[in-house]
Every structure is written in C-alpha cells, then in structure tokens.
Length: 317
Image (cartoon, rainbow, N blue to C red; front, side):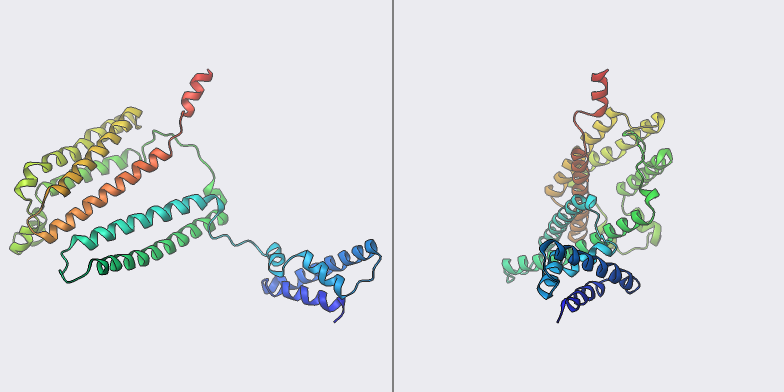
C-alpha cells in the first residue's frame, strides 16, 4: 500500500456515507484537499509523502463519519431551541401517565390473594409501556414541527401578540358560553341523556349509574354548579371589553384553584353516583381535570416575567 492507496481508502470511506448523487463531487473535492494538504506538509517537514504521513494526515483530517457530516445536510429531528420544551413535555407527560395509571390500578377492588408487589409490578409495566409511546409521539411531533419550520420558514416568523388578547376572539368565547350552559344543563340531571337517546326506555341500571347520591347533592354539587356558571359572566365581561383585563385573569386563577379544591373534596368525601363503576369513572375524570388545571396554572406561572416589561417602561419614563 502506498500513499495514494491510503488517500483512496479514506475518500471512499467518506463518500459511501453520502447520498449517491453527491458522492462523486465530494470525492473529487476531498481528494484534491488531501493531496494539497499533504504537499504543503511535505514541504514544511522536508519529507517525501509516504504511507505514514498520509495516514497521519487523514487521521488529523477527521473520522470519515465526521467528515461526511460536513458535506451531508444536517438531519435535525428536534431543533436545539426545542430541547428544553421536549424535556419538560417528556417529564410532565410521564408523571401524569404514571399518576393516572396508579389511580386506575388502585381504583378497582382487587382479590385479597393478589400481592401488593404484583399490583405494583403491573402498574410499573403499564407505566413503562405508556411512557415509551408518549416519548415516541413527542419525537414524531417535534420532528414534524422542525421539518415544517425548515420547509416553510415564513410560517414560523415571530409575530407580536397582546397578553390580554382573546384566544379565538369573541366568537370563540360565545361558543364556550354555549358549551358551558349546555354542559351545566346535562350535569344538573345526567339521566336526560338517556331520555334523549332512548326516549325514557333505558335500563334501570343505566338510570342508577347516572343518579347522584343525596350526600353529593347536599354538599358539593351546588358549589360545583355555581362555580361552573360563574364562568359565564366572566366571559361576557371579556366579550364586552374585547380583551382579558388583568384583574379578570387573577380572578379566573383564584376560581380555578377553588374549583380544584371543591373537586378534590367531592372525590374524597364519598360516592357521588349510585353505582360504584360509574362513581369511579366520574372521579377519575374529575381528578384528570384537576391535574390538567394545575399543570396549566403552573405553566402560566413559569411563563410570567417579573418585573413585567410594562412596569419597566413606566419606571424609565
């Protein structure tokens, strides 16, 4: 083997790691760079180009994988700017999944003969499986977002937005009010769903499953319904103003915390529905609402800037 063989071997190892249509051009350019570099080194050292010098120079030039990466378009699945967002979404998602699966595992009665460690192992297996799916979905989602930004950079250009804007506009709030009123009507008497679809001919067990207990109706139900309906005048005020005033936002945050506290009280205080399966299902979704609400409030708290830019501008003036 001579110096030319070393160069050809190195260039080949680099070229095969590139797309086929790019190989010839890169091989020609790389071979010229190496030959030129070896000639300069030979003149500096006063040596003749030999095998050892060629090997030393190629090793100093870089690993074939690294050199190929300089010529190959960079494939970025998750943009570096999205790294922390991906990490937060991964951790928060896995924590939520593990908590929900834990509640699901211990919400149903188990046989006395089933050991606690066996139940815990079943929960852990479900959590690992769900976490893998979650991470896969996140990678796919962030990867598609990154590809979309590179494909159409104009769609990802920054645009200023007011902190008190109405997301979805006035029309969105109008539809939200209609949904709240319709949902409150159903929650007042859930059996109306059965009357609507089955014209009052549903099985008695179905009516029992959607019937509230007297304890829930006498304690938490009036408070929960009042809190739900209280969102209506708040939204109407925002529609009239055309924005979310700062005081309204603070009041909304307080109401969300109060709502979470009442929901937890209702879940821990005893059965809400007459049948155990329906009661456990309703409590599961109510706790899910609490978790989502607290996560939303936590994200808003982390995104706050103190002191706010408005306050800084006022001070400078």
